[in-house]
Length: 631
Image (tube, rainbow, N blue to C red; front, side, top):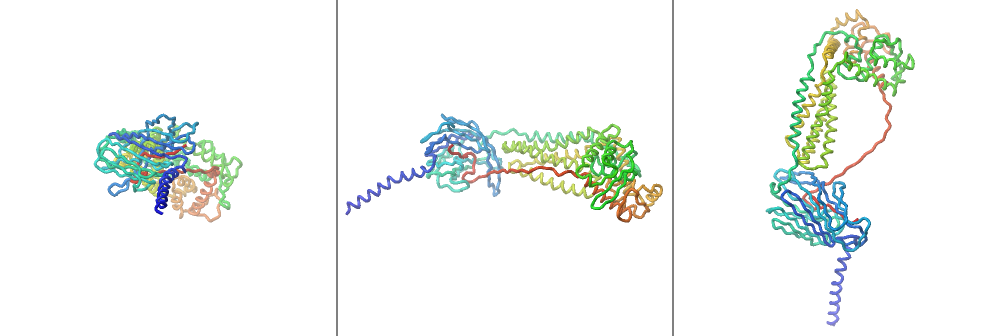
């Protein structure tokens, strides 16, 4: 009985002995590729240069060409410093890649340095040994009173199991603080797979359990802020900031020399400058050729007896040519008149939809071109050129500042060019809006002024918040940003006021201001006398009031005066100047909608997406490591 019991015990022990290796081996036999062993040796010098040597024993259970290694270069890290969460992004490019005794290819993809080891035309099986090395230059974390070594000695992106993993980190000098080691899948804050030792100069570790695909090992070690003598990036911020300040001074000089207007003498006027149509008055008033200026000519032609206007049903108007346009009018006005009646002496506004806008645009160009002629020049061309240059210069300097700050403080080179282009593009659009919107701010209506101010404040706050947020994320927010923004604003203010009127333009502007004041402030008895002498006086001045945004004011002044109904307008209601003005406003709206309507464009749509990552204070949260597998 005892002998049988002994035999059974021996048989059971033998079964255990022979089964265990088979079970352990079978765990990895399921994989086409696994690493029986992997060792990483990291040497860090006093300037923060990392030299990484990795030794891999690979077992190919199925044919493969070799292994590939993905090393992260573009990393976003999260920190908690003094109870505050801080996010920083770093770009530490991998250099000096070496592969021992194997064919290899090295390239970059999606922020990774990829090392592909093996011959693409040769498949291997069984045991293989690989040794590769690389370097990368780290920089300061750029966090006040804080510096730390954060390195993934084994990244969480490896797609193969590792039976035995070991690592060594050689430090440039002794450190008193204790390291933290995390192991496991990405985000884990525990360590149950690595035993490690630390002797103030070297951190070494060894796995006590196999590491599954996706499991990594991260090492964290706090060091004094003066521990490394980092190679400092060239600091372009003072250069860009100084350039901005110099350009502010230059811009101020240019403004006083080429932008400061001559004193405007406002004369007493009851009519437009001699030879000026309503379109010309509108352009000379605000320096812009717009649809309103051009369409005002319809009312002026009617008041001059050239056309008749008839109100039809369903938002339609009928225009009838009564006379040919005089030969002495500017060419743009004659072309517009003849183009309006090119199909006959009677035209309906509905017939002009989606076609007449071409002639409107041509007339606006002709109006602008007229005032570029020597005898009509309103603004000095060099002041306009300087205005454009300053509008471009302000966003250019701001974009250069953002790029220089990011480069100096974060060394995150992948974002420098995009940051420059995006900042320049956004701030350029902002600059154009501000310069155009505020160039004639004093003569705009209260509603437009309020709208411009509200939009300007909102867009300014968004621009500052976005710029500040980006710079804070990369640890680049400092007093220099305020200097750059102030310089940006000053240059834009000078650009807004840079357009300088010629002496002729100043004289015309004074006369138009006099007419505008008359329209706004004329006394009833004065108007009564003028209407007595010229019954059509109300209609003759109406197109000028229209381009000066005073048509309602003008019509209300004549409510109590005996103004005859115009022979050239046929409406559907009883006549008064206020009712007539309401009809005219409706007529101008209908006419404008028809004459300026553009055919709907044909096109499509598209889109895209982007992604990112993060880490810090857990397995997979440091720099380096990366991942890989077979290929």
